[in-house]
Length: 307
Image 1 (cartoon, rainbow, N blue to C red):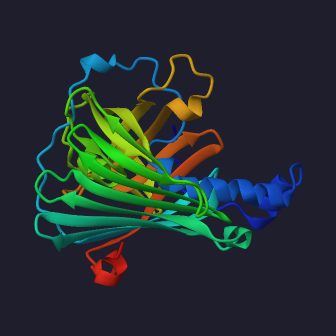
Image 2 (image 1 turned 120 degrees about the horizontal axis):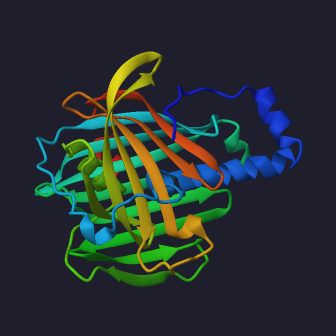
């Protein structure tokens, strides 16, 4: 995957793309992609690397975390260079005794808001010691449709509650690994990768809950790479990842449901800011580019964290 500069597609180009299928259909497709970004962009659909090491050969990813501080990240999300909106991630270091909080929210672009209610939010309560999730809540909105997930974590697995709409009967279930290895949500996985200090070419694995599914993610440190960040060259560290949904049938024809891949570029500084995240999805290339970083606690007010 290439690390190209982020661009905006002119509105007339969007209209020309819409002509074969109809503008309404394109808007609905973009809306679906935007609402799914919160759930899947961190390891979106693609084929695993052909030269990836076999799963049993990869050690588990373990890191030593530094001091936790309040942090707010904001980035733009694009699909095939078409603006979908923005994502804001907030770290709240003092949620309660031995706990801290993280929350993410998608704000769709004005054009997509024409479809109706659209967006998503993710809220996590994590352990301050080992930074693993205790509970996670995800809500994704796409017009009249809502998907809600509630996860309660334990060593090696989690219990989930899933409701597809307000009127649907909820689904409850359990995901469990054979061994009690830590299971991450998307927030804790991002913290883990930012804290990783690997050797060139080093590979490892971690387990991540995405929605109600459990995924094994294999990561490889590709080394330093120059990247155009907000119009200026910057030295970054690139990590490539390939994921497979646990329990997927071998040889499944629906690769989007069983295999995913992504690339993450982290800043060279001690904060290891996630300056870009890029993934190949079945609807095109999805990219998130960092546009703002500060130490604000504005989103950590009790009412903002209410669940």
